[in-house]
Image (cartoon, rainbow, N blue to C red; front, side, top):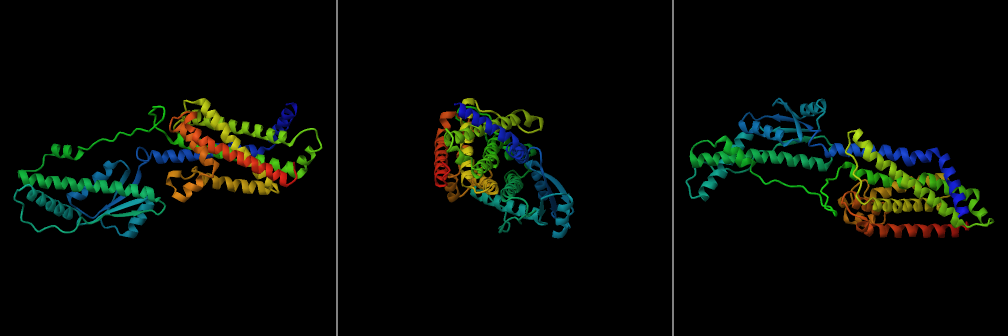
Length: 426
């Protein structure tokens, strides 16, 4: 025990002297989690607070064109700016740049006429189906002239499809209103009362949104719940920048060989490093979680809600940290230089984070990438944390994720042992 304690104190002194490694393990993850959470929170709040600027060029002077602009305003997603009707494509592009708008919509000049014609055709068909006499007008063929949506290429496809869906909803409202008015007038020979029109158009079923959780809690997740656990894992694995280099230095300097001449065992040194750096990963988690709980609200960001099973959170954190430390030691054993350890370590961590779901959600990946994700320890770390933070689970609920994580850790430990044996370091 004395040998282990002495070795732990030695590793702690080495760690404290490594200022760059400490900054990479603590300052970099803190900055990262704040920036990413702020960006994602702005995306989550896009509809309620940060409305997208959209330019509307209406070449239609009729009533339906004005109704469409009102409907776009009422969606709540856009901040509408009206443009003169004689705008060409180049002028619209220049206006988008001047207004810092990513979107622009052009309403065709025959929009009202086409909407009324379509409404009349639908009304006549309805009258015939009711057994009533319809007006003898020319049968309507075709569809309403399409709107033209100009968008900045920087907009991601998912957001563009959401915008397109919102515009289609506004267009549907305008067409439905005109159809109702026409049909009501054909039956009653008087205009549709405004109150009745409003009731008919707004009479739609509500949608209740309830997050699924294991403990019955209905607390909706926020950007902090998604990002803080993910980038905490990223920070844990970045101990490789300090630990990997430490293993390389001791290997190159002959420390492992000198251990053979002393009345001790190499396992004491490896166990010391694991205990020391697992403690570091736990401190990392405490610091980042504390920032999410108390620091985020001061920055105007949603606060982090700690899971009810605090013991389960501690166990998951320790196992995730142990896996990160095992990976760092494994890389350090096989690296021939400090540069190789840092270079390969940093790149491999980014790759493991990408395929593990930290950067792109696993459900958005195709089948082949989902299979590959199972080999990333970060994937199982993230699933275990999400099971606690997002699903409100307990330790027993995330055991299905911890078991593969422990198996991966044991494999890394075995590879490390075989690497030391092959290099005659033990």
